[in-house]
Amino acid sequence: MRDEETGSWWQQVTGEAILGPLKGQRLTPVFHDELTFATWKREKPQGRVLRPDEEIARAGKYAPANWEERMATVPVATSFTLDESLEPRTLVVGVTVNGASKAYPFDALVRHSPIIDDVGGIPILTLSMRKFAPAALVAGKMPALQLRQGNWTLDATEEAGQAVNHARHLKETLVKKGWKLGKDLKYFEAKR
Amino acid sequence: METSNSRSILSRKVAWLTLLLIAVVALALVLLPVWIIQPFRPQSQRGLELSYAMRRWSPVLTLIAAAAALTLVVWLWRSSRRWWRKALLIIVLVPVLAATWFARQNHFEWLFNPLANAGYAKTSEAGHVADNDIVMAIELNHEAAAYPVRLMAYHHIVQDIVGGTPIVATY
Image 1 (tube, chains in turn purple, blue):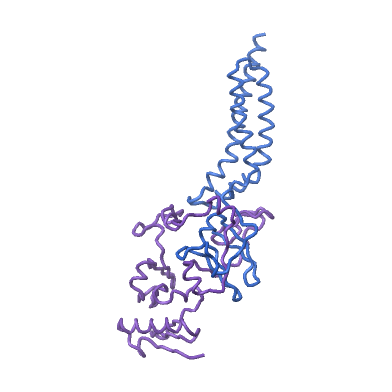
Image 2: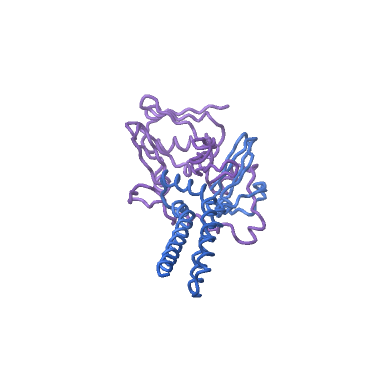
């Protein structure tokens, strides 16, 4: 994007001015999420939604209903050779710890969540928020998960309501997977 | 007499070659950046810098090219007797003039249609968004706003103030 005021070129994905008088400056990133409208309106019934421009809508210029399917087929622009074991636009959850990185394809994550793994020598737990807390990711209400001396601590005190339900669900799933409550997993739930 | 004739032929040849060169350079000035910055293709810092420099200088350079080309065309026109040579002059001049026009267009953003007066609907009244449509959502200072991707895919950029903070949403 080029701003008309200074003629600087801004990179959309990073918000950084990459060329021109403002080169090197960066817009402050704002946490945002991409989710279905159904999920969002359940979470934010008081929110507001961008309206279409009537003229443009009448002219049929807005993206068609199958936009996401179409986008899944467009090429991916990278300057390096892609790992061909996955489709280029496969959605993954990337985890980097101590310089080591692993990616979990989102579909696999939804199927197998929670996934217990090791990245960079650190045990990690990867969760599908779609399965455990479809609303929590947007609101930043994910129950706190911490590793303390080899044990997982699940702390549901951060937010009341739905987050506690998700934390309970997660605890029960992990216990079913063989985690021993009190040994492998410490669970805290406090009322506000 | 012969020497004068051969000089004239040589001058015309040089003029033709210069005219062709001007046309090639003028087109390159506007087309190379388009080729370098085409969507869905990896880009390098060097390529972007080159495109940026060409984008900045092309309005002036193409104007100079157009003036020089026009001068040469007028001169060659007068000494051309055959109709096809005159036609060829026009054919070479048109791309130079087209490049001069193109250099004044913000063509990198032809696909961007900023929504100048963005309007919003309450969530409960947003009949224009289907339940399975993807939205880009933010929340700042307890104010939540969503930008449907199907609208953003056309506009690409919307400026807004959410929770008192000016933001720009891009897709």
